[in-house]
Length: 387
Ligand SMILES: [Zn+2]
Image 1 (cartoon, protein in one colour):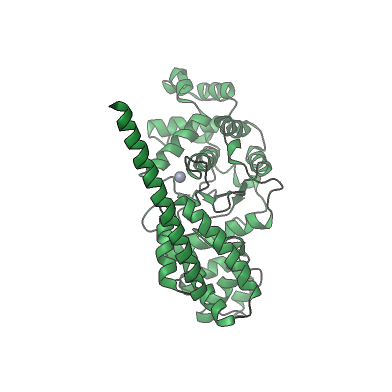
Image 2: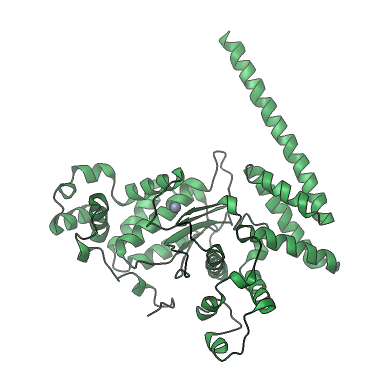
């Protein structure tokens, strides 16, 4: 009897898998025909399906890339324009309808986001950021961001994007910040492609232990780069309330963006490990296929998404394993000496232990001069920090 049940289960699973594969094929054919015809409705419908089917999404990405390349070759301009609009709309689904004027353009200019204009040009009214000019400027900015590589974009699709943030998060500012981070990453790609198998728990511990070094943050950036991951430090834009993000659009080159909003050593290492944990846990499915997605984190907010909690736990374990924490005197009597002792034993920066004490106690008034306030940004002097 049991044998028959297993047979039936196997058959049902086989049937489901075959049906899924058939449906996927139909969707792919539809998609290619719709791309040729510029049929936006069908394209949108298939893209919707792909949100729940990572294999389909992967294939569509390849088709889009091939199609985008083809677009550069064909002389059919009206068709090209239709497709450019479709692709642009896909990119900005999260801020739909795409409104150039809603981007924080003045701030973007002031931060040097656009090569062609400077804050000086704007102040002297050499550039008008209204209406058409804004859209033009953003188009140039986007194409220089490396989006040509991934025309497809799950990028910035609302449904593949996870935010741990307040509801007042400004999506236009978030999109601008993301493009800036991607642009920086794309301009200096790592020499070696990323292999997600390198992201073991030991990898995370190794990063955590770099905190004990004097140039820790920079060493971590270099270490990640050697393994195909770009860590881009880019201050947050107004109304983004952002600490960090894990942006996985290119399987061979994931990107972590950090704002150093709080400029504290404990915050830097927790945020960094949390984003690496996202890369380790949430960008590859059980079959080992890459799932393009993005995670945006404001650590002043509670985590509701279970993946956020998983990344928190993984980061916490890499920095201070729970078992070590529980048996150490610092968990009971958190004196500065006890903090330093545990940090030394775990080969991590004392600020991380102090940060754990404050978080567990729910009190941010204790050990205030041990968390390395104002000691991270100085490691990245090339970033234009606001004074
Ligand atoms: Zn997160």
